[in-house]
Length: 368
Image (cartoon, rainbow, N blue to C red):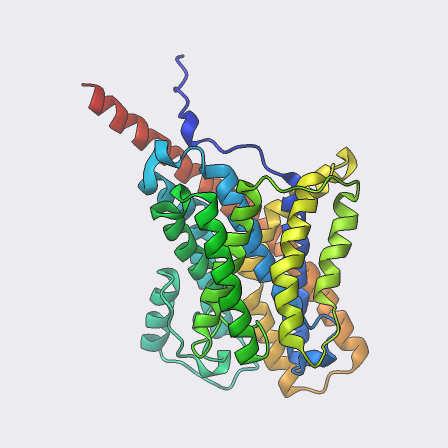
């Protein structure tokens, strides 16, 4: 039986498994941080008070990975094929996260705010299409009330569009100037707000633009400059360094601390991650963390909202709270694994196969 010809320019380069592992570490941090947000509304009292900066680390990784995977082949495949590849990678979980978010609103027994079918239908449609729609008061008027983390996916899509239409072809000198401009913008946003946590809700949406602009460009610059720091820290050592960024105490000049972490520390961690060696014993863990990181990030928030409504309406002692957070995090990891195995991976494989066949069919027609 003849084999299907390979579409080589649609295949991905080998992954940096260690970077995938760090993405998993950041995703778990986000889950725990979201639990603790309800317990410690004052972030200065939260030992994981800078956990939200994990999103900026995601953005930095994204800039590096997109440059690594597509800089040399986007001219061959074109922007449209790039967009389709990114949609296949990202959008199935945007859809599933919206569905789970809708279910979370329906089944939450601790929420006293109701929505009629028409309102929820419209909110759901905007969520699936990844169009910001900040109308849910009990969700802090988030850009995506059903699944709050979708705000970062919205900006990720914007960055991908800008990359495919322009960034991939600019010189390193131009990229460096853009990086400097984005650094100034990020610093101004942090100074004005006193923090970099903005971007997820209607009031601070433009803060999210500054966060993706700087970190995505920083990751891209690290790749194109071939910056790496050879070291023997491995996955455990770099995970510890990453976690240190999230537990930095709050200072009077907190806005400057957060800017320093995003501007200098995260790109440095990226260069260390590229330059370190990953032991075979840790490779499997990093691959696993990498595979579940995106499902974990995109599916955990409905449970967080239910927990928050429960915590705000009940007296919860420390022992029970600790148990709930540990159990909830473990449940989120288990759910992410199931979703990865039964939904995310098979759906993406099916869509990728359809894409390859469409490209092959188009190529055959062109030859006739």
